[in-house]
Amino acid sequence: MKRKFILFFLILFLFFSCKHEKNKYIVVATEPSRPPMVYIDENTKEIIGFEVDLFNAIAKISNLKLEYKNVPWDGIFDRLIQDEYDAIICSTTINEERKEKADFSIPYINAGQVIITKSDDNSIKNLKDLQGKNIGAQIDTTGAYFILKMDNVTLNNYDEVSYAIDALRNDKIDAVICDYPVASYYVMKSIKYKNVFKIVTEPFTEEYYGIVVKKGNKKLLSKINSGLSELINNGTIKKLEKKWLN
Image (cartoon, rainbow, N blue to C red):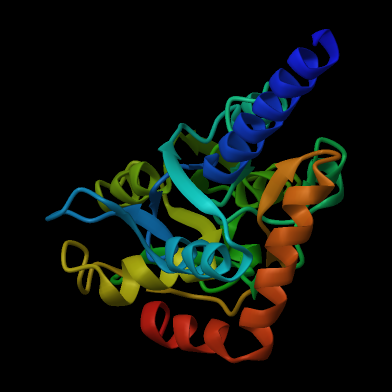
């Protein structure tokens, strides 16, 4: 009788454990201030963009349930390590320093750095022209790291790319360095900034975005990569680029 009792509760435990696992949401952290990749729709107040469409498509293929969480960029990797969420999708460039902290998916887009200036400014046409200038970038991004390596260039850090863009518009800085997809939005698509800015360089770095998971979370990473590979092969990525970036 005792064995039957233990067996009954073991089956019950396994049933509810499997049910819980089946219904578990993957909490996805993002800092939605990077249009067109990820940002908040002014009308619906929902998080939208290229990367949201991308992860939703991955979730559909790999049978994942997603819950997006709006978080500040500063410290985003530390909070992943502390299990505050399961993944990050936020125009995150894959590099060796970050790979020491977390694991990355296969890359899904190449997004090099470019320089943004005001449309009527002809003093900056290339990287050499940045010498002696005040340049803005979002804190802890590859754009900010790039500026730090330059001689005679002053880095102005901002919590969000949009803050750097506003500072440039108000003549508090001379230029902004950021990822090309983000730059293209502010220069070509934003109604608020129409005809205010221009991109003065081709992308001068090769940088690839990836989805981030906690180091060692091979199960989730495998599901993400499986779905992502299918989206690359079936042309969905190209369709998303056409929708959000062209």
